[in-house]
Image (cartoon, rainbow, N blue to C red):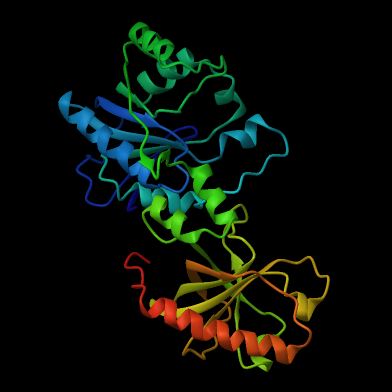
Length: 332
């Protein structure tokens, strides 16, 4: 993203790189739009963006994607904190690669949550955002009145002057691709299935923080990651083969997620720590990105440190073998 205009309260316009939208165009242009949270910006969202561009071109409209800064259930359900696939900033960056004219980010407020579908379509989409055609995903619904059928949305659109069309589901292995399905895969350690639906390797970024130095004492120095976004979906506890990006370079990496029971006993402090192969530099305080390629084994309690070190040697050899035949990601 290169430009942000604060145009209206709780509304921001994002212009992707190389966008041909004029900076002073505001909202006076007519748009075809789609609305969603778009967590993960996965292959289903890419399919929807391509369909949006096609629908817009047929109607001589400009394609616009409308998303929310906050997950709607943060407002709709007290105490709910969803686990997400992307931080807000990462999501906007990925949306900016889809080739649409512009991206609108709304803050999902309690006032917005109280709007009916017709109020949202007329007051926000039509009057504020210039929407003439609304493309709805196969499972998308909105409005305080709880409408779930497409025909009702289409009838509301006819009343307020917005053409409503729907997009079919994007399928993978017989089921629709969805953010929740990808999260379930990650929670089960199925990183390869998650990557197939995301269209990229799942990653977590953060700052390297000080740990207890136990890995270094065993000959396996680790970088402990303090995640940049506290609500990100962390993959299943265990050991992973991963690519690590630090200082704009990629390194093979053995990652452990969990509680380090051999060293920390009954500690309930969950950590993400990475041993970067063929790398021995001080990177405390630096930015680190971990791209999870394959789950290797569950986290286990070993009888002593020596037994753990032996297993880590085997894990490291396994990681090197896996990643030697797995090309490093090109989009980090």
